[in-house]
Amino acid sequence: MDRFYEAKVMRDPIHHYIHVDLPIIWELINTKEFQRLRRIRQLSGSFLVFHTAEHSRFGHCLGVYEIIRRMIEEIPDLKKQLSEHEKLLVLIAGLLHDIGHGPFSHAFEAVSQYSHEAMTSKIIQGDSEINRVLVKYDDQLPQQVCSIIEHHHPNKLLIQLISSQMDADRMDYLLRDSYFTGAKYGEFDLERLLRTLKVADNQSVVKESGIHTIEDYIMARYHMYWQVYYHATIRSFEAILVLLFRRLIDLDAKEQFPMFRGIYQGDQLTLAEHFLLDDYNCFYGFSLMSQGGDPVLKDLATRLINRNLFAYQSVEAQAQTTDYQHLLKGQDPRYYLYIDSASQVPYQPYLSDPAGIIKVLLKDQRITELSEVSRIVKALVASEAKEDYKIFYPD
Image (cartoon, rainbow, N blue to C red; front, side):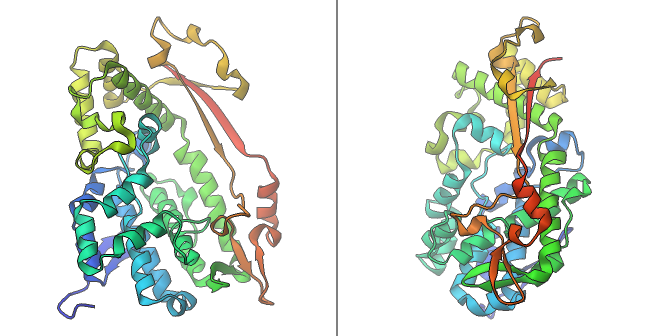
């Protein structure tokens, strides 16, 4: 550590304090690309249902960083097994893992064919303040950090810490989203979970005594999906977003609304254009549309601004090809009808991918997959995926 650097702390409602002990981390936080995350809500349109869900990806990324910092400091196996350079790499990867996100999360990506993962790597390795901070310390850092985020770093343990069935990303967003929505479903015992984590055969495992904690964590994620992330009103907001962007593309109005230029370019989006994509600019664009001349854009944008969302009905999966013209009042179904599907399995081990399995270290030092030793998880794995299909239309 630089002897002239004074460690920083930031207050946080989930982790109490975010500890920044390294100058490179503080410099990355203060780049314009990271500060942009303050202007990206973590949960898209969830604030229209849960009125305090105004938290940002900025806070979430700091939270992921803090959990990883605690892991490599407090879990003896990790502290001993990882080199100082590997610890730095995974700290940076955790901090920057969502740097490429656009506004409104996956609703934006669904229309634009834009990949936040690809944009994350583009920012880290491209002409950005983040890249300049990294290469100042080591010109290999950008590529090495991206290798963790892109899942091809040779040390798979580093990948597991930020992207797996039991990673710092999920741990933070469950607790953070639960807190800010007021929905208690996402709570689990993070302290106990961290105390039961170990490393065996160069992979993250949980001690047998921690099985109940992991069961609780898995159910927290399942309930948060159905009670928060897949809430019908939030899906209605995102349906209107998709239809509005569809209309915008059909009109080819990128010159009139330059803040939405990204929906035309997908992964060809430049870093400068991506920087302008945030919730603030989008809602300014919606405000312009609500006063504009195109009646469809005007109506859809006004609905988003004033929370005059679409009604919805549950439908069967096979009914997606049904003619629903009778639900409309003369409106064009291309812009006023949207069918959405949601599906979730509480836990499904991906046996071909080490990051897709939660491993348990038994008392006799054997390692096994979680569902082999948990009756609850075994029942969840055997159950069918819960699916929900809804059609959205103007009331």
